[in-house]
Image 1: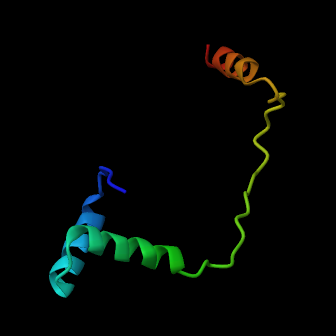
Image 2 (image 1 turned 120 degrees about the vertical axis):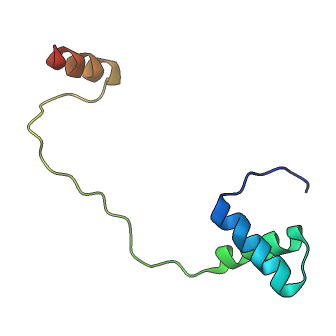
Length: 75
């Protein structure tokens, strides 16, 4: 598959390092890094959303109403 991507500076530097170090082409280096990321073990820690009470009593089932209420509080 041929596509165009924009790499972050640190990723581009790692692709270039790997390319020079192993004598690979850009595509081969990028594929190797992508595969390494795919096989990396997961941390095993489930994501847990933390929340704290902030004193607002708002029905959030209608986002537009919530935004209106919050805008009214600013005035």
